[in-house]
Image (cartoon, rainbow, N blue to C red; front, side):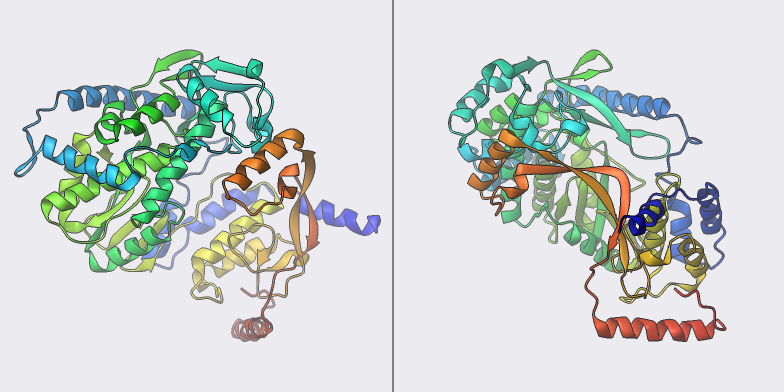
Length: 532
């Protein structure tokens, strides 16, 4: 048995020719069949490509930091402007600044309530890095034990909260007060990284609780932050009718200022949010006092910005008398075309800059939540993000190409890219053919019957006491039907893969149809056994 598994392991982790990356780029760029979808792919698929030949990591990181600091300079001006804005200034025709703010504030209070519930402070830990733990040590269960960081403003709130937490005890001597969060960057595009911040552990726990409460309240008014499909469908409809526009903002979450949150949020909500956020950020050893209210990495930033953009959009629609759909997902805004320019103006008053390259008001194109549409046609590209180095990368790339080029539910390849897909297929062992999901990278999607798939080798780690506390928390909040088993251990994936049986469910009629179709296409190609 051991002898038969060794070739599988070797197959799973084998490197592939270095030339694949260069040749794939050339093949895509040399596609000659003209179509809007193909041209859009050729213009977009390298937007996020990062390799040793692009700008060095240090340069991309510094550009991101410079952009973040530039946003902070704008935020300082916004904070001053909002505080000193004339109350009787007509922000819209016959609408004063005070009238607009009062209506928006009332809408927010009606939506989330005047006072957050006690339970909303009981959050959860994420699996991300914090100020006390790096990514490899950041499983949620591990954050319930050991050293925990918190800011001074959040400490009293946590001390009151922990008394009523079900079963969670924490050694007070292990709680360390810190000045704020810590900036880091992650790859975003070929020329620049994205800034985010590692939050103190206990701040994050409570931040996520308030964020979840805002998320629940928004869902009651039709804004579901767990589902991007509504925005994508509305963007598709807008690309056909032109009645709906898609707006995108530059550095949106980094442009929500302290003065704006104070202006719009009910006082008890602001007091709690302000106590749990980090007023300062460590940037390469220097402490920066923030003009923004919260950064990416904070547990409520996404929900708070969504709430504010929704309220500003609804207020604009109300005061301009514009009927129609408004949908928000973070800084992805969809609104009726008739109010678009007014909304862009209102957003600018409160410190937000519209990204003209990713906002679409006129013409047949719309983009929202990762969906790109031209006259109703889905032209969403895929992205080559890094050089192709392993078999897993080849499978992922081939499946991405197949998903992009598919013409119907049976994933029949567009003839103009079939040759590229067949070329990639040649690098994948036959045992890994027969995948059924183009979004996965563990088996190649082909008409063949599923046989094998790649599976990461994992190491099981005991969570011990932290796992028990984690289970108590998620069970008490009824966030999970867990019986505790899944919190007693956590799995760390290694970068090594083995081959395992592919147990994907396959409809027999679907399987027969695909093979009959495959044979027909093969005959049309003159008996070529390599088929799409």
